[in-house]
Each structure stands twice: as C-alpha cells, then as structure tokens.
Picture 1: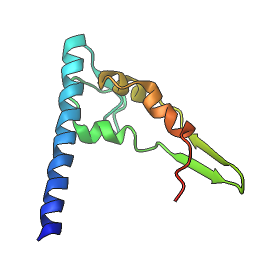
Picture 2 (picture 1 turned 180 degrees about the horizontal axis):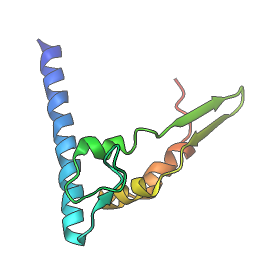
Picture 3 (picture 1 turned 30 degrees about the horizontal axis):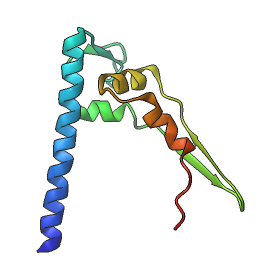
Length: 110
C-alpha cells in the first residue's frame, strides 16, 4: 500500500510540474507578444503562442551529456543549446547557466 501511495504522490507531483511548465511558457509568450517557432515536427516554420509541455520537452530530446572517466579525471560534455532551447529557457526564466553548469559539476562519489 505504501508503494502505491508513493507512486500516486510522485505522479501528482509530475503532473503539477508539467502543468506549471506549460503555464509559465504560455504566460511569458502572452506578456511579450512572442510566439515559438520550431516546435511542430514536420513543420519547423509553424509558430505557436500556446505550446504544449510535450512539445516544449521534445525540443530538448536531443540533448546529450557525455561522461568519459579516466583513472584520475572525468571529462563531461553537454550538447550546446539551440536558439529554440535558449528561448524556452528564457521564457521559463531559467538561467542558461542552469544548463551549462551540468558539464562543470564535480562527479558524485558513490
């Protein structure tokens, strides 16, 4: 029963995060009068002022973090942000460093 309650709470939290992302991006677009271009697969020139969270997150689907470990060091590389991804982060009021600092973080020792 505890596992089921925990799973329900986790799913509720995830739904709230998804809803919040969509709300914040749409509100930012409305306030600035902008639209997002490049979210629609098959129609990269289509603009929208009411993007869905699914399409917003899909814009980040090609992001890759590579970690190469040597005996004494670890090298990290993260794919650069596209202009669309940078725009989405600005709309969410996230700093670009939130993303770029992932590659600079020290490894977690287990």
